[in-house]
Image (cartoon, rainbow, N blue to C red; front, side, top):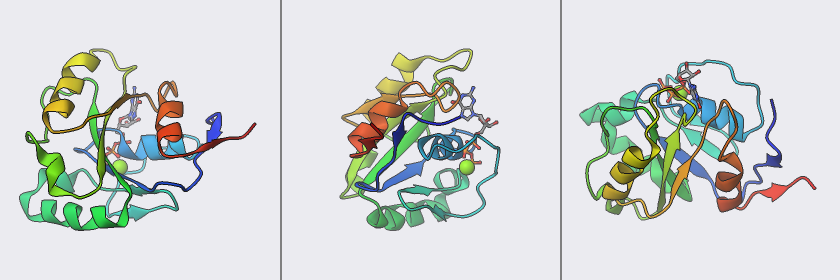
Amino acid sequence: MHCDQDLTPVKKLMLIGRVAAGKTSLTQALRGEALHYCKTQYINYHDTIIDTPGEYVETRQLGGALALYAYEADVVGLVLGADEPYSVFPPNITCLVNREVIGIVSGIDRAGADIERVSRWLRLSGCKRIFPCSAYTKEGLDAIIEYLGGRTNE
Ligand SMILES: Nc1nc2c(ncn2[C@@H]2O[C@H](COP(=O)(O)OP(=O)(O)OP(=O)(O)O)[C@@H](O)[C@H]2O)c(=O)[nH]1
Ligand SMILES: [Mg+2]
C-alpha cells in the first residue's frame, strides 16, 4: 500500500498520543510503507517523522521528555483516535511548546468514529488545524503531507 505522495522532508512531524492511538501506523502510511504492527518502545527517529510511545503521554514522569523532544521537530501532531472515549490532552496544552501544533484524528474508518467530538477536544487543547485521517484507507493523508510541504510524485 502506497501513498500517492512522497513525504518530502520539509517539516519534521512529531507524533504524540496515547497507546494504540495509531501513531506508528500513521507513520508507516505517511512514509508509503505497508502497515505492520510494531509496538513503539522508544522514541523513533525517521528522516521526517518522530514517532513516540504512547506511554510517554500517559505517564507523568515521562511527559516532560515530550516537550524537550518537540524541539527536534517543526510540527507537533497531537493524535487522538476517532473512537477514543476521552482525550489525554488537557485544555490549552499547545502553549507548552514553541512549535506549530496540529490535531490529528486517526482511524476515522473505525466503527464508532466520532470525528466531530474528537476534533472538539483537539481544538480545546489549542489545535487550530485538525486533520482527520485513516492509515488503513489512506483518507486524509494527502492533506497532512501537503501541510508538511510534501511534493507530489507527478
Ligand atoms: N481501523 C484502523 N485501525 C488502525 C488505524 N491505525 C492504527 N490502527 C490499529 O490500531 C492499533 C494500534 O496502532 P499503532 O499504530 O501501533 O498505535 P500507536 O499509537 O503507535 O501505539 P503505541 O506504539 O503503543 O504508542 C493497531 O492494531 C493498528 O492496526 C486506522 O487508521 N484504522
Ligand atoms: Mg507506536
